[in-house]
Image (cartoon, rainbow, N blue to C red):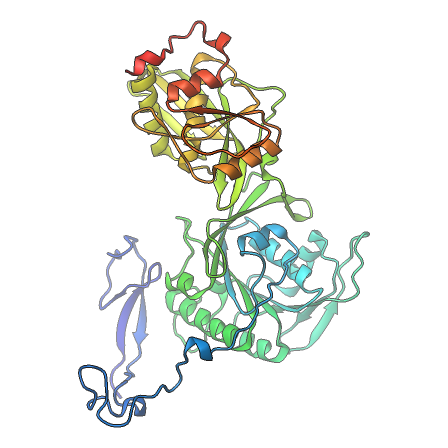
Length: 508
């Protein structure tokens, strides 16, 4: 028997090395190489019986003998058509990011920071789906009693069946909510981390949906590496994917994230699954964002908005109201923009604060916006409008902490900065939509009709938009502009600019 060969694998990116190094040259992380024993078995593809006439094949791909025949491959007309009916999860925001609902037999990976609410969301979704389907909730981080306690806090009004180590089911009734009356539910909880035991339970229970919380805690005993390592995560995910596709079982998998925000484990983990969702939000704020990064069954970059309340996560059907300030009492240095996340328009209030600097170089800070774009807009205001931004500290933030990094919010940032510099109030019934060019132009943006419809629905009366685009007939006044200076004059009332030195001729 040959001597086992030792290799070193980076636990962050999966790169293999023949010897140990202090730093992975592929992902630039220190002390991330772990020692593993490589398999000494080799796969001889050409020696298998499947390609017996390999040597007799000519260069043009035709064999000298009998005509070529497919062994297992099919043409498109030989594959049977099947209409896949999506499941409604009970939460419209989750259905939105999944592309219309849960696809049977799909594999969904949900990542997020610790304590953001991943397990809470999946337990609530499992409870909703358990009214119609058989659900298995596999927890590797909590015991059955802990899951029951959390279910009681969330108001889960269904009997939860906990499967113990001896595969004996014990039904524990959770105190129901007064307004909820549920006849029965198939929700089973399995506290287990051994992959073989999990697969054995899936084969016995045959659930319609299985939740794995989390994939970093699951281990395959045949591998010598520790749970959460690159090899363990890769092999366990591949085994679960094979079961999901063969048995048509939907898998919802929780993934831990690194300190940089990426899902821990090999990058192949995100390639194996069908959908990748990120659960984002400030732990000290109430709202949570569920964002689509990859989706084989729908559009990407969709978002769903949730709010953390005392009894769990609650949907926010109209997120624009969450990110709007008090329009009845406007403050200087604020502007309203309409940002688009996927196909969802969201009205957001931007706040700016400009003050004289006491340092040799002024400070710039942005919360919820792209810092590089902020610096670029400040340079345009100094060069094209004449505001001495090089002598001023500038701070810009989005209300609620929502990240709005698309170019369509450039005009709102510029208007908010100018309003703060002049200590003026922008008309609270006006929204700003447009990209700011380096020459001071206001450039067109995409999805203008969706943005204007959202603004009109919330009662805004005017919209400052780029000139040259076609606009729908809505109950909102359209003010097309071609330059930043024109937008500033249109956004801030004329009587507020009487003592201003803003002049359209300055940019010539």
